Image (cartoon, rainbow, N blue to C red; front, top):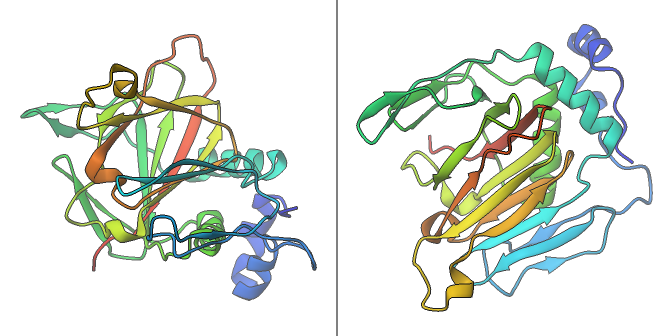
Length: 253
């Protein structure tokens, strides 16, 4: 079980603690199994070891590799992290360029990452001021699972079911797509849809693939996923609670 102290206590004392001590809060107890994917970029060659995370393969072929870890964070840790990011992250209503028009997306965003690192998409540019302590700890846990390094995190806050994001691909030139995108969900469950860019002749295969993202879950999109698929989080008006999505990325430097 992943163990976290109350974040307020961590943030007050972390300056006087060694990084190794902070990291140990997340490390499994002796003898506990971990979830590791080896050779994740090579279709059909990854080695998945049986461990504590509930693992599911969504796609694993030449067009896309998408993996889902249902309980990457347990409920207690997911709830603590949700509160930490809600209260101690600077959220903003950004403006992006969509089909030549400047629009305000129906969600709030924030960015973390290595100091001074920039990431541009949809006519907007994000410059990181550093890592939130909690995010940095979780990032290292995600890196242990995927085998890749991430230097940037784009966060989205869906205030309720009326907030959403349309079908798109994260294929900006700033990104190292070989590392893929690792996405953690916190809070309300939301539908996540994967839409094939090329419409198959078989009508059944044209439908989007749906994954219900639970709080504490980790979704990894790798391989040629961004080239062959778009993804979206559609509106769900009946959902009243908020959701935070953390997307760890590798930005070219």
